[in-house]
Length: 370
Image (tube, rainbow, N blue to C red; front, side, top):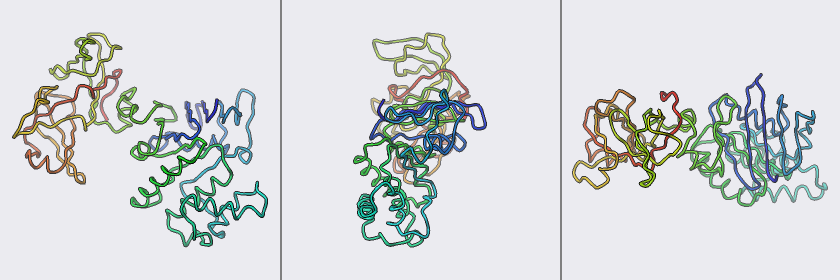
């Protein structure tokens, strides 16, 4: 198989049950909280950590296979690795750091190739600067150029943007997005920032306690988590329990009962009437009813209640609606500040919302509490 294939299993010292696939030219985001095994998986791919069981292969070539006790040494893996701290040689210039990774080229060709790589990461003119004289973003780009110097078959990025400020980070996002279109190898991006992964990755792997919870296209994973655990890891606050009332496949709905309310959800034939389910709806799919001008959308899963929480968050507000006669956690939704002001939102105020049926996703029952 072309691309990267990783299967790792062990109980200790770091539990792992991870299955990873990344095609050539594809960016795979490994997302999970601290301690979820992201960096350990990266180190196993690079050969810096040897798991107890599993297999690592690139483009059909085996790098590690516990069943045959085979483990290719790190220096033979042609793997580009960018550390969180960049790990540049402080006594070498930018071009010197890159030349250090070009031992496979004839000496007369190395500086020329290093200059080409610096141009690729937009650092032409800074060849002779030392790391101490480079900004955090510039150091990061030198680290990427050095990783590419080995002509790697896999590029591994370990929290590469965490050491720079927000403005620099957003500029580096754009540069990586543009550069990756010219790369033919799989790229594995380790991050704890879901928004970063959603912005940059073609595929997403959710990890928790060393276990792969879900793998797929970012938008699909975000909208259709496989479990309550995955939904919580993705940051969804509106995760509740309900009971299936009936299936209406002709209309494209599964009808559920939640807190005495009958809700239409996107059709899911896995469940039968009477089944207990978990369900979630993104906060962005909870639509506030306008007080001054009701619309036809108010008939879609309408709910009313009292605002129990109201927070300013940049240019938006996040509110929690305690649904009438509800005993479960409040329903979270967000709207721009001007919408909140126009509708008089605030703690203790009454409000009505609609839940977009197409966005209500059903899952196997689990602990809905955060």
